[in-house]
Length: 241
Ligand SMILES: [Ca+2]
Ligand SMILES: [Ca+2]
Image 1: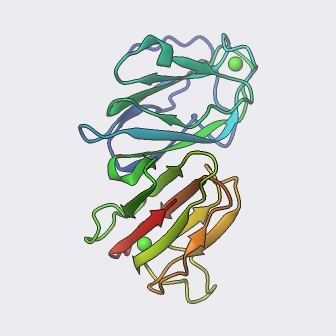
Image 2: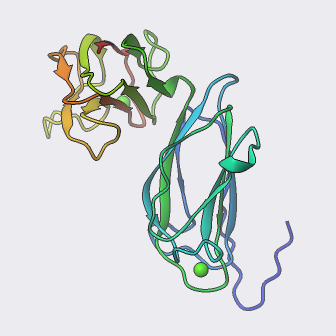
């Protein structure tokens, strides 16, 4: 790539090909303001026949008119309608790819920056959306050791009127931090709705099987977060609507 610079040249490295089960994407210099004239292309690639979920957790771009700075998300199958531009402070919705590839593009123009964005993705066995009235969910590679450094999300979305009861059949995660007595390393958590802004119903680690949890409505979110070392067998849960 040839870069022509007149006054200041930004050598920010951004973009790339991401193939992990989960990961994070941020604008250059995040959480400081992104540079002008930035252009980043990420290609997220999951295992064949699996999908990718992309969730923005922070989003602050220049203006509500997307012809200045924007984030664009292109589904891997190239369907034109799936190519959306996002800007300003309107956080993009959670996006699930229709194929095993998702392109994310960030562009800024010649002036006026902002904090930028942070998004995380999960793919393959690290994410799913369940619409069946009952099913099992297990951590990636269960009953083998789960990977380090992952954030996985599983959504259960049943028709209105349903509530969801979830039972833990097995739980083996890294133990609590002995200093804080909290699940600071690896944990599984459950939210009463579609995303983490909903009420937290529980957060667990170690090997003590939690009591069943019950949603108040027809959606439940199960999240697994692991840190950089020490893994274990993971979990197996069963839910019924
Ligand atoms: Ca700008
Ligand atoms: Ca760990």
